[in-house]
Length: 327
Image (cartoon, rainbow, N blue to C red; front, side):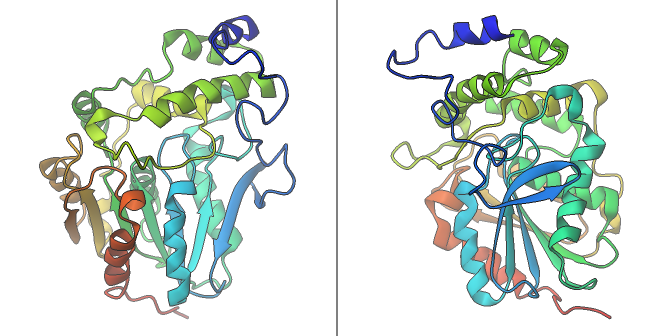
């Protein structure tokens, strides 16, 4: 593994000392104790909250898999309205602890979200709204399809351009996007699964290479080249692992969505050529009470390029929900 990854570093600046933590990519919470963090399910996560802990909870789910919440920090403005806004980097993502591929399972990944909600809950009846972007919107739907409204607590969801809710939809979406499920390439994927363990340095190198791809983005997303969404660090192994599991095991997160009777808001950028209106309408049809709002003149990075408008749509939606705590 080390030899293969070193080949990827051949074009790094000679003055860089990549073996030193933090030189290639920022340190994770296991390497930098000053970062805000929580412990869940045997893992250490990069996480932060804004607003009153007892207010209605807004759980923010970033994209990826393997991204981080940095570009979604404009949602912290909702704390001014009395909401308790929870940001976190998912397992193996962003600045959270790294794991080898064999230690990342679908069951554990799903349970992380439930564990997070319970960990930051102030009262048993505290209402929750899930706000997900891209993969994060898929993650929110996966949770709802599995747990429904989580005992009456999940009162709504904001889904910004989810890619797919089923395997067939994902294949079609990736074709429109012009990307492949083999995000890191066959060589790195094979080695990642076969190695007995990856060192922190191995993870840093893989994340560095993945970060370059994340910075460039997908042309179909139609991003503003002068204002790219910021991020701290990509999670290369978790991205490859989750996409590999999706391909090998398949998924259908629409089986139980018909029972979710709370309003759901879909937000999309007009310019995105992969998450077209027809595509989002197909996904929204799985929810009984879904509305689609299109933001004009923007693509997939709507949350970063037009944060005030993005937050305004969410604020308006939240006023339509019943967010009173129930006995």
